Length: 149
Image 1 (cartoon, rainbow, N blue to C red):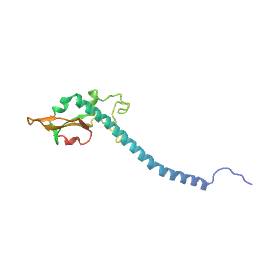
Image 2: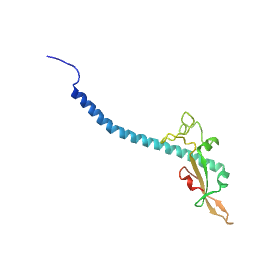
Image 3: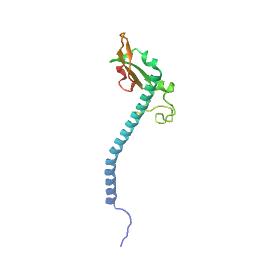
Image 4: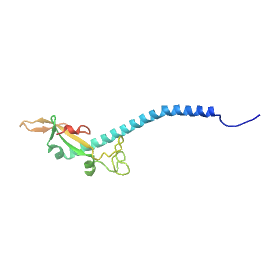
C-alpha cells in the first residue's frame, strides 16, 4: 500500500477557487470603506479650517468689513489655508490637519490644501442712513467661493 502525503491537484484548485471568491467579495467592501474614511477625514479637515477662518474673520474684522466683495446681501472675503497658517490661526503642529511634511493633504486627491480658498461672509442690512450695516454671525464656507464677487 502506497501512503503518499500531500494534496491532490483538485484539492489545491478548490482552495484557490474559494480564496478567489472571498477576495472578490472583500476587495469592493474594503475599497468602499477606504473611500468613506477618506471623505470623512477630508470633511473633518474642512470643518477645522472653516472654524479657524471664522475665528480669523471675527478677530480681524477689517478683513471682512473693508471687502468690496458682495453676494446676495452678504459682504464676503476669501482667505486661503496658507494665509491662515501664516497668521497663526491654523497650528502647523496639528496632527489632524498636517502630515509629517507640514503640508495639509487632501485625503481624497492626495494634493495640497494650502491654496484652498475659504469664503467668510456676514449678512448685511440697510441702516437708517441707507448705508449697509452688518449683523448676525460670521459664516465660513469652503465651497462655492466663486459666488463672492
